[in-house]
Length: 279
Image (cartoon, rainbow, N blue to C red; front, side, top):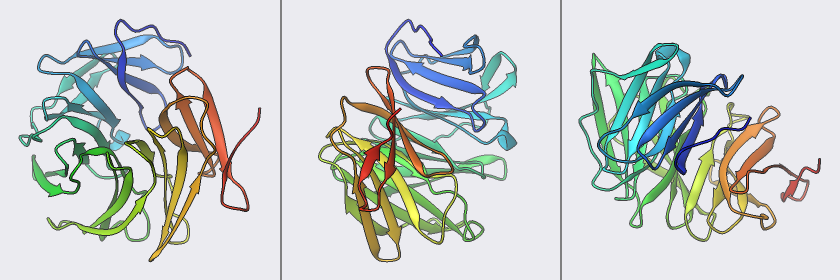
């Protein structure tokens, strides 16, 4: 699909089934398009600051769209008709001290994680009709990417977050469900420079936590955590900067989008290296 925008894009997200695509732009607007025919479905003007990051909830909750803003705020909008979104009346009162670089809706709960250049991530849970926020200091240089781990056998008791930083590291943070305490259980140096985007697969396989990432160093990576064992697979140098990362083919293929409009696919070989899938 090809979409014309009036201003450079700052973030792009699709709903859980790929029916809608949301694009935020530097002119402080969010446009919702149909993935089927590229038609414009709705526009959300943001008056206060620039929207930097977007994430859809599962359809069970609306669907809703979480928006991270350059002024440190997180706002949540809900679809009220096929061509209209409205901010929900229960606002997230918490604001980061720096720009919000990333947001991620939990795959099965009404819960939003946000990361900021102030070095904190926050978890916003909708409990008893209002948002409850827990903020965690996590990086000296700032947080640049965040994503929830997929639901697993532990999903009823534990929550797990992948957090990428401006220092090129990816960390795993874990909390007991309902607890305000988060623990950093693993850390790995993955990129030189910012971790730009991370993506967790839709399934957890055999107790191994896995996340794909792209960074400012023109490399893609797959990081696996199995207990205390950490395994890192990296690509060869990319032909140009990657702007997005996701999983396909039952979570076996890493799909990258690039600033030149191209898409590439990568798979791990027997030696643990990411190799490009030729057309």
